[in-house]
Length: 52
Image 1 (tube, rainbow, N blue to C red):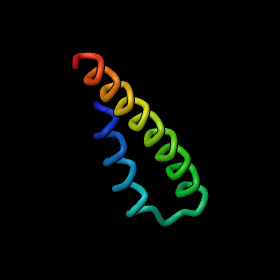
Image 2 (cartoon, one colour; image 1 turned 90 degrees about the horizontal axis):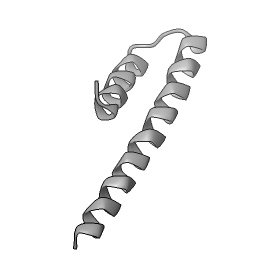
Image 3 (cartoon, one colour; image 1 turned 60 degrees about the vertical axis):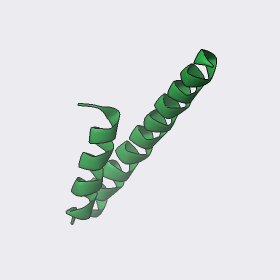
Image 4 (cartoon, one colour; image 1 turned 180 degrees about the vertical axis):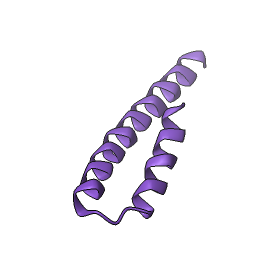
């Protein structure tokens, strides 16, 4: 599963969450996944810039 897919899955889980504790856990996992996705995007952009 890609990081993007993980983010999408966690968003869907959060949308269906009805337990406060579970929602907090999903929100935490989602924040971590979003940071990882942003880091991956930054690395990709740097790689593209290095090709110029």
